[in-house]
Image (tube, rainbow, N blue to C red; front, side, top):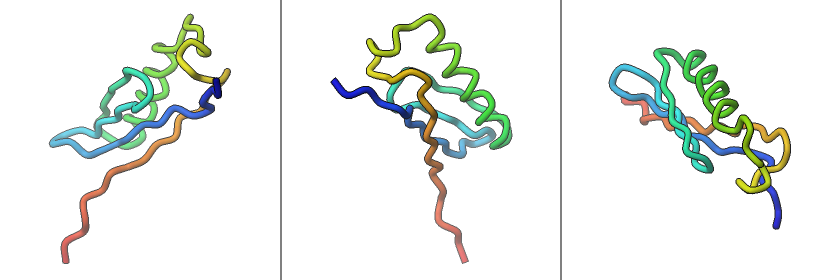
Length: 76
């Protein structure tokens, strides 16, 4: 089995906050600013993985977080 070296997450703008959701593990968090949501995402992923056998989750040791941001088209 090939282990993933990245955890994929998507950040999107909600009504009042930014929302970050991991696609590979059950982690969702939010923040009022992009900096806050990214910090919260790192903390939430670390807490979720703490004490887990990463190989059982299909993850390589010390995975990184790959973030994609969804943007609405700019209106002219």
